[in-house]
Image (cartoon, rainbow, N blue to C red; front, side, top):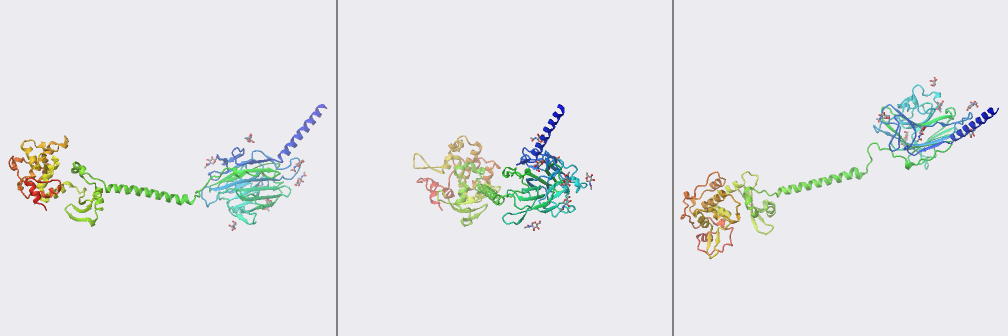
Length: 546
Ligand SMILES: *[C@@H]1O[C@H](CO)[C@@H](O)[C@H](O)[C@H]1NC(C)=O
Ligand SMILES: *[C@@H]1O[C@H](CO)[C@@H](O)[C@H](O)[C@H]1NC(C)=O
Ligand SMILES: *[C@@H]1O[C@H](CO)[C@@H](O)[C@H](O)[C@H]1NC(C)=O
Ligand SMILES: *[C@@H]1O[C@H](CO)[C@@H](O)[C@H](O)[C@H]1NC(C)=O
Ligand SMILES: *[C@@H]1O[C@H](CO)[C@@H](O)[C@H](O)[C@H]1NC(C)=O
Ligand SMILES: *[C@@H]1O[C@H](CO)[C@@H](O)[C@H](O)[C@H]1NC(C)=O
Ligand SMILES: *[C@@H]1O[C@H](CO)[C@@H](O)[C@H](O)[C@H]1NC(C)=O
């Protein structure tokens, strides 16, 4: 007796417990503002991205993906043969054409099903919801709201961009092109499901009115007052007491990615609003829409800068090349006396034809004004690229053969570091360079005549050669002087220098004749001489002028 009373008591507690549990389920609700910590059951190719998107399909063809709320939900009052409860749900989705922007893949569907997952469902046009065998079978107990991007004529699809309510089959009970009614004007505005842009969907079932409403809108624009689809239908025979809610999607032969970024559900009430600003960002697919500055402005600016830099470098290089100083071997010794090519270039205004005085062998002569001293000069332009260079130049001088004497004196200038005519320190008399060098030669020490500034920086043979050659060229008897041709041969050591004595040069034999062509040479020293003396050379200089 006591036992039976205890049993009854325990039974009463159990019943009240079950009743309260059932009552708790009646108001179940959940919200996912992103799926970062979501606890959904996924299968197929569905996965969560690192930033919290539910990615129902990846780039694998002919596959489907599912995501379900993990727990069963009571859609009916279990204690009686009652009608299906009211419910409401909203979610944000996006469909990206992953392969061809103009070719559609398949769609996405919100689904209420008796199982968590849809075993045996086919991908592609079956959207992972049904298969060939069970499509349309009343024992499916499936409600789906499809967002379809392919027109499947076998299911009487209206187009390739539609929203439909499907009950137990893919042939929609009602469908419409994807669009929304604008609240302000009441106009229907088209939407493109495959645009990749996020959109929000509301699915609501009113258990009293037995009515299903489906509303679509662009992201963050609010829920339109007028639903796109409204179907009077009693879901009571469709739903079991316990059902699962989730999403299904599929890929076909054209790859498409389906994303859900937020989801809210409520049984017997209004689904909680999604926190749109908190939803994870959808990935950009296809070319980024860049500003005109980035697409046109920046490349143009960069190209201009690069062009300017390159032109600058080219200009500097060309300028450097143009004014590059090419020191030929023969010039090295006379470094400090040389004019820079740049100065000559400026003096002659760039070797303009206007300043051309004339042209001789191996080059043209230009008139110019030195920028520093305003001195008028004549410049002969010889290309150093001509192989011969100095030899040609010397050969040209040699062709004006009367200058041999001057050339000899020139050599002695160079080697002794003295002027052809130096005033003597102790008297008003002048010292003739040739005589002076000759004196050293007579004493058997011609090298003593060398420029003391040379120090030890000379080659004995070369200096001796130059000094002796200088004396030879200054021979009083013009016929005894070597020709310029020979001079060049001596200087280049093609022919050995003959002994001076063999040329009739002896301790007594070097004299100078009047009127000898020293004048060209002497013009280099026009005013510094201050000649008063008794020298025959001085006389010749003064009398033999041009
Ligand atoms: C996720 O769902 C499973 C199955 O319903 C449950 O066992 C687990 O505790 C849940 N985890 C979280 C974090 O909610
Ligand atoms: C898609 O997901 C499935 C399951 O996670 C995986 O096996 C497959 O390699 C994925 N495909 C691609 C292209 O990432
Ligand atoms: C379900 O049944 C219980 C008891 O029969 C009742 O109190 C409750 O209002 C019902 N719920 C709905 C949503 O009809
Ligand atoms: C349950 O409801 C259905 C229709 O909604 C009705 O046909 C059936 O007779 C009811 N059963 C009971 C036991 O009341
Ligand atoms: C519907 O499905 C059930 C269960 O799978 C099966 O027994 C029945 O034969 C199917 N009906 C049709 C018409 O295919
Ligand atoms: C809606 O679907 C049900 C179940 O498949 C079907 O019996 C009914 O005829 C359909 N109604 C319309 C209007 O298409
Ligand atoms: C909207 O879409 C429908 C169906 O695709 C089409 O007939 C209609 O011309 C479109 N309207 C506009 C304004 O694009």
